[in-house]
Length: 504
Image (cartoon, rainbow, N blue to C red; front, side, top):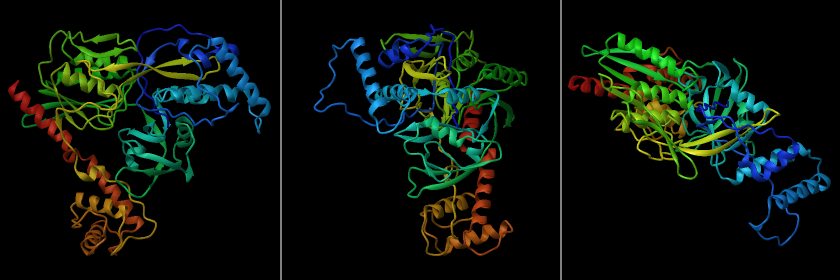
């Protein structure tokens, strides 16, 4: 589903009404068209490959001296030839949309994309209070639909989808040649229905078959709680995305925590795919010391605009952020601001690395063009695009946090070898059923571990890893991951903020 969390600012742009003739001109001079705001996207948009069509032989590269009128005339001539002579009928609208998509493809920028009316409407729906789907931010990377981040406690996360998983098939059908948004519309669906995804995962030799039951995905963007440890109160604010009301919800949560006299604050943006710029800017103003830039925006000329914090005094308690590889876009702005502008620590893993800014250009028919126009830079002016933000305290979760889902077509048993067996061994070990190895070879000790697991879960004790055993095994791992005591990154952050509170 197209979880595209935009980062809008208050800048206004001139809107140009686009009729047929202007659409033709747009094919040549698209950058001249204005829009109404700009935003960050953590998802990348893939443009369908356009077939190369030659209208003559021995043609050389076009001269840069051609005028707009000459280029427009050439474009119209090419469109006329295709409409009159191509082997199949093709509409003018299809050709115009294909031309726009082809232009965007030539930019070699996965974040610049054309969306038809249906897709644009889906985009706006995903910014509302809820939507129906699997709950994952997706992008197009190296020509493949890629999971950027499953939302916290979403169907995608429960099913075991992970950042950088590549979607190869949807319901058994290859998605090769589809645009990102065409693929996304196939993934979305009504609550209660199931979509079957074929996944390619780095380090796994076999494709994974992952069924995901669609659900209603609420946009509850901020959750607050108090953790009491060693006689101290640590406030925890989890931000799942940066939506329209996130800053207000964050402020409410922060005020409630401060009313309870917290000794320190944790801000968790793990699995957060991004959101509105003004949301992260407003949150930054609540926690980043005044006079420091929260983020910088840079245009193609290298000119920068800095968004400054106005907080008069630093908070009277330490603050620690928490990130992972699925923290993207606006989450990275906040993480970088904590480190560089606030001189605070961030615990966890390096973030996703989304550092460009797109501008929306709406057309009269409801379709939209998104074009990369800016970069966003960290407080110190660093470009994190493709790199991410490195935490000050790197902490990796236990191996079973990263285990892949298990697909069982026939029971796994002695002397078999498979990536699925390897993941089962990692899960068994994480649950305390020692398999003796985690290389994917099903030996006698693995059999004993499976047998012990089956006996402790009232399953048929065969020692073979069948479909029912694999299903219960994965359920137990999800429960294990959910236990706060098993969250190594959170535990480290708690220990760090308590230590700093004692020194404060």
